[in-house]
Image (cartoon, rainbow, N blue to C red; front, top):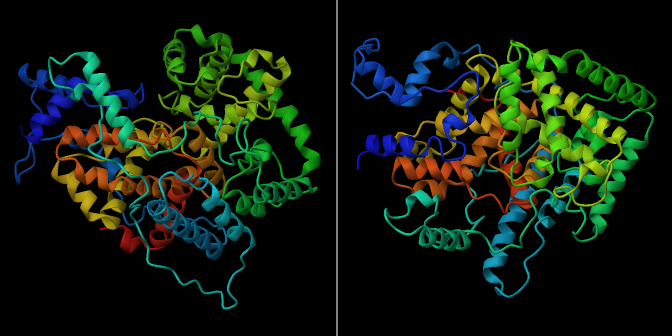
Length: 544
């Protein structure tokens, strides 16, 4: 069947069913181009404007969308938003050394596992990161200050041994086959495609591996925690040192206070923090009293209705987020943010961005696992503090990426275009393979930018990822682009094995990361930093 036939079948059968389809992730205020509606309009006589002269080619969904918002897709020579390095930089030599150490240790680990007896217990996932973290914190610059940049490696070969073709959905089962057989077939392939690792909870196994039910802290982990505590105990916290220390991950015990400091929610001066917390929490609940009763007013009811629909869809596999009291908290946070930011209002995807903050700030009050925790057991004051802190920190995050959610979402369009340019530089094979099968970057990377990869990674990995995003200058906007590029190229083997549009789309929307943990995120971040180092200061290499 032709590519056009595959694409029509894919969108017709899967647009409403496949998690993360374009219809699923577009903002409620900005629906995507509908090819079926477009065809009906043509039949009714409302033909589109004539195409420009040249080689005739059937327009794709991406091309139609691009033509509608062509002005937002221009990346001119004077547009350096994604290219300019931040004024505040981390120690480049130290971070590059960290990135190289993580990748080197990861490669050695994979080679050792291939040579070792399969019955032997594998090395702990976080060992490679811990060694790199120590190097990051303790190594000093060379005396001459020069950095010998190693050859940049853009592939992650051997990270996950996948046997056979990836099973992507039950819809691929032969027509007429029993559902039970299709389910068994899919389960068998999933089992074969996953690496041999223990079952991991969705939330509890977070960055530092020190949550309830995991092994006790190692000596190295205890040392890192002490460094954080010493830094945070001073009368004025050195935020630059805190960023350097946080880049390699933040221990659970100090993550709440560290996130509040790095996001700018709390001041560096310790004496002022309690007053600021009280004032900001009172201010938030003042907004609740002032605005929340208007949620059923005519000019706000559409916003509230969409929020009310989206909240139950937020992390549906984690019981914590299905509790009525938690959903009410999320509704208040999102509604207040939407009416205080009328330029964008509420857009689907913003609901995901509350969850990491909420989980981290719940850990400020509990010791046990969080995914099954009953929040009604917390005192009312603690719940109110968690809600207010989550609101303000989410607001700080969105302040830096609000153009992702304004009309036509120009920030996302620019980032997707920049991602396409970047991937064409670092892996031509992957780029040309997707071009050959007419897969447009907007069709899968829109969600990566809109939801900050939260739909692609387990929540524990998102929290670890955000440790580094908080430590990186413009982490949620600028650095996220390089993380997405490294993430895409990470799956080059699986991508190149797919030989049709439908197979590529379902793969890219259902990447097998459920068993990802500390090591995979650390390698991803190391590759992303190397990409940033190679391209952020080199616009002539970055653009065509």
